[in-house]
Figure: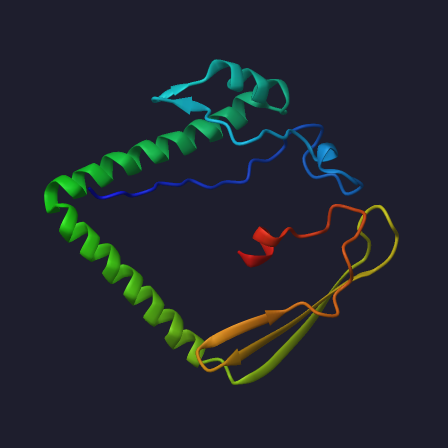
Length: 173
């Protein structure tokens, strides 16, 4: 059996008390926080979770419309996946996915090869983290060694009190 996962990622705006707060010092001050929950179960929206979300965001009708649009995109993806699988079979779809991965890796290797060997440095500054009035420095050294890229943030400012820190998952993405 062919297993395919569908995802629809989005950043929803204007939640909680006003979206991004430059003076937030804790994640609770940044708006609505929910643990991973299923808003849709067997194709139906969970009304309790829906009410929790609506009670904690501005312009709830617009934000819920965005969420429903994401859900609709996933439904279309599921239908298209089923059509492709039914038309071509699991083996052909698996082979096509493998070919796409191979081509993507080849294209990335070709692009990396265009980057000159050696270290490439950049520095960016943020005036303040919104809590402590000190300049933050972000230093990046990108280096190509053969077919690999290495990104080093050594020398950057340490984590700050305000909401300007980047969690590992965001930095890696």
